[in-house]
Length: 220
Image 1: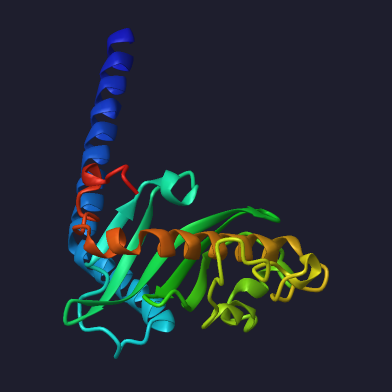
Image 2: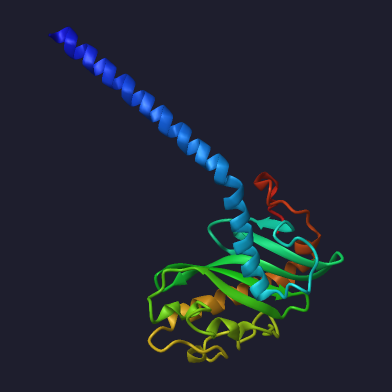
């Protein structure tokens, strides 16, 4: 009787192990078959975001491949960020920089900020956030045109006092019942523009390194 139970347990264990192996193989096969399509879709989504803030007829390089990873310390973020560089016949046109506003009402607000070589903002888009629906979510372009208020704006100086929400004496509108969210976004965009203005040459002259994270330099 004991032997019979042991035999049954052993048989069931083998069946479960075989089932696990088969499931793992299936998952691996599906991933292999869909990997290229997933990568392609991610590239298309990224390109749509980039082309919404940098005119696609203003550059002729493969912008999502002309990419530079910045260490988090460069922009004061907890994680590394990316810079996508637009060029026309190798001439720098604009750069789209990812960053994080850490002080949103409900936490991090992930942004994509495009800046022209003359220092003017080409466009800003919100990539991810957890702000309150109906209030803070007006930072999404599909909910409000507010995020477009950065277009063409420049910093007169590093301490340009206009780069605040109107409640703080600046030029950007706040939302009714929600000042924290736009305040956080304005601050993050302002800091990114300052960084771009101070490091523009390095940003455009450094070799692409998004394919090799180990090559990120701490010189930025």
